[in-house]
Image (cartoon, rainbow, N blue to C red; front, side, top):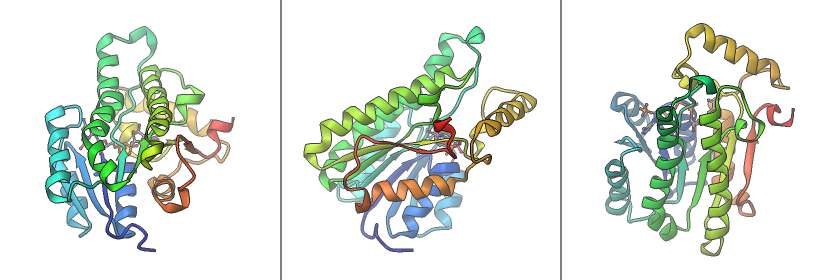
Length: 251
Ligand SMILES: NC(=O)c1ccc[n+]([C@@H]2O[C@H](COP(=O)([O-])OP(=O)(O)OC[C@H]3O[C@@H](n4cnc5c(N)ncnc54)[C@H](OP(=O)(O)O)[C@@H]3O)[C@@H](O)[C@H]2O)c1
């Protein structure tokens, strides 16, 4: 691995598992110090204990005080500089419209949208200090739909437009803002939905059949994109939504 991120500080929300963990370990392997944040200390600790370049903060990013704790750590322990923010924490509720309640909307948007905005706002002074970059996690479904996932896909569609507008707003500051839109990636997110195991399997089988490359991706596939977007090789990319989806979005 190159050490292209040596001396840089990255924050990855939800960096204790799945895609966030793969991104965190990739940045760390290329020299960055990576702060991972999530609610489950045991999960975060396991990742950080195995890697000298990773430290953790227990934080529920839907709680503004917890987000302030993350921002204060960057201010006090990392010279007030954040080179790479990856807004990765998210979840994918699957609920048919006929069963939806407003509580489902509140829960989905609290994490997938509101928390992403809060983390960005509270860390922005430090991103500006470092002339850093922001990467948001969207999903292929934000543009290509998916039944029974309206809260999730509506929230991620909002994330994509925040990405584009923020890219415009921050271009003069030298800050690039991009999003990655994964297709189906093998992580626990599929087990955390409200579906029964049988319904979840049916849901996943239905998705795999529609993927042109006919397989589910790995966290590493998204980490490759996140490494590229955070690097100087992507210096001419901002406001982009990068699909990493086995062709799903092309179908
Ligand atoms: N896997 C896919 O197929 C796929 C496809 C498209 C997009 N994505 C997107 O990729 C991102 C990562 O998903 P994943 O598949 O890696 O799922 P995952 O393994 O379930 O990871 C989600 C992470 O978010 C953290 N998180 C959840 N709620 C949080 C909260 N309130 N505060 C802080 N952290 C929180 C979780 O940690 P704690 O539980 O410890 O808090 C966990 O580490 C999400 O934004 C997701 O929408 C995934």
